[in-house]
Image (tube, rainbow, N blue to C red; front, side, top):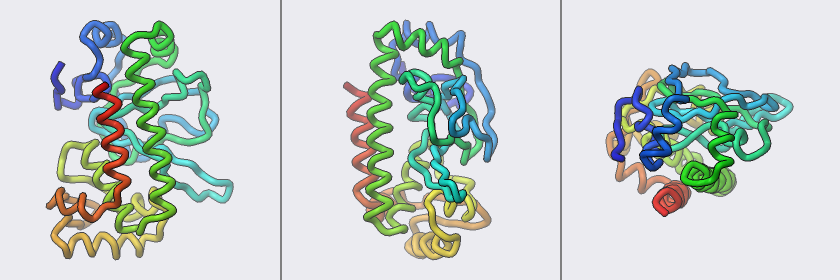
Length: 238
């Protein structure tokens, strides 16, 4: 099947698009399209996960919040992924949160329906397990990146992932959201974004970011972006 870029079509999500036709058709009647709004929590820490979400044009951040209220992004999911993997991994709950950072569409399916399909084995199970492995790579590489690389490199990495998820050069992202996700002060976002703008890589004004030069953005990022991207592509093309 070939990808469809209409966000109201389930095939706009790459995981669903990767399924064999017969498996996709079995899931399709249980998929429900929903509009996700900025700041909406799909689940909180400790919640029972009732739905698995397949974003098509939204971006969802996986966050961990400490006792003092500080937050850090562990990973993200857009049209290349899914949200709520604990629903089929046997845990049913998770200590992190899933919050919408860029509004858009997604398809959701009841967790029990997906668990039943997952437990049958076959293509659905294999695809979701491979995606889970790629997400673990994303989470672990994010931890390495946050520890070893400069904020400007981290910002480039984050923008590249967001660009991949959205399939558009424009993102609506305030300094407050970026600082919240990447764990830096807003002044740091201003400085780093200003350098990228001066270099002609992005334009940034009033919460709107335009990617002007994708190639330069990749060159300014650390290796973490390529590691995660390549592992995702490897696993989903096996």
